[in-house]
Length: 168
Image 1 (cartoon, rainbow, N blue to C red):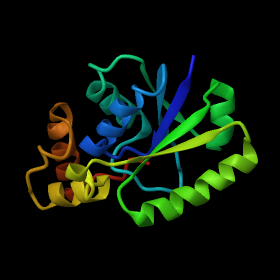
Image 2: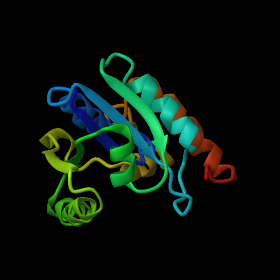
Image 3: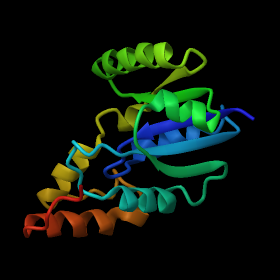
C-alpha cells in the first residue's frame, strides 16, 4: 500500500488544502493528513480542534486519516510507513522553503520522497492567514473554507477579538 502524508498547521483548513488532499488520493492508496503540533506557534484553534475541523471537512473523502503529530516529519513518515510527503505550492517563494525542507528530510530519511503539487489557480492566493484576516474584519470567507467550518472560524475570530486566550 502506498501511503502519503499531507502535513500542515491547517489553522484553519482552506479550500486550497482540501484540493491538495483530494488530489493526493489519486496518487496514494492512503493519505495521512498530519496536523502539526508546534508549541512555539500561536494558533487560532487547538490541535484537537484542527483535527476535528479537518475530519468534518474530509468526511466525504475515502482513504483519508487525520492525525496530529509533533516532531520530525521524516521520523513520523518512517513510523507510519509513508513513502512521500505531498506539498502544495502556491508561488515560487513556497518552492524555495519546501525545497529546503525536502533536502533536509532526504538527509533524515533517504527513502522519503517529496511530491510538489501546484495549487489550482483559483486558490493560488489562499492561505489560512488570509482567511483569518478576512474573517477578523467581517468579510465573507465562505468561498475560502469548507462550508461545514465557516461558522466555527467566525465564532473563534469573534471570541479572539473579545479577549479569548490563544489556542496554543
